[in-house]
Length: 147
Image 1 (spheres, helix red, strand yellow):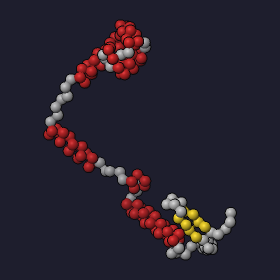
Image 2 (cartoon, one colour):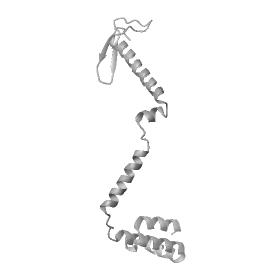
Image 3 (tube, helix red, strand yellow):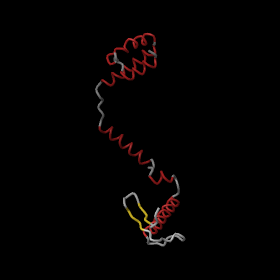
Image 4 (cartoon, one colour):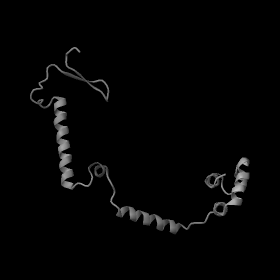
């Protein structure tokens, strides 16, 4: 067994030899006998296992409250990223406002064309077109031409 194999199995099965599969135990003992670095890693894993097996430490409520208030204060100091910020980046407010107004106007104009409240652009006069909404996601245009 190589050192890397031993360390991987040590992470997988822990420091207790009873948790290791029987077919790996002999090779692990041989690897431990030849490598002081592996013995040191085993001692660290054993101390970690003892720490996990011990009783959980009691945490005082006022410590938890102090921690939560510190985290809240730190979060309030950091500027929050909004969807607009993620999409547009760090643009000046006037530029963002102008962009939003342009999008609103574009939506109003195109919505007026589709609804028939506004005249269509020059050169595209309608000729007997009907618009049918067959599905919420699909708009079908019937223009009377066979295809």
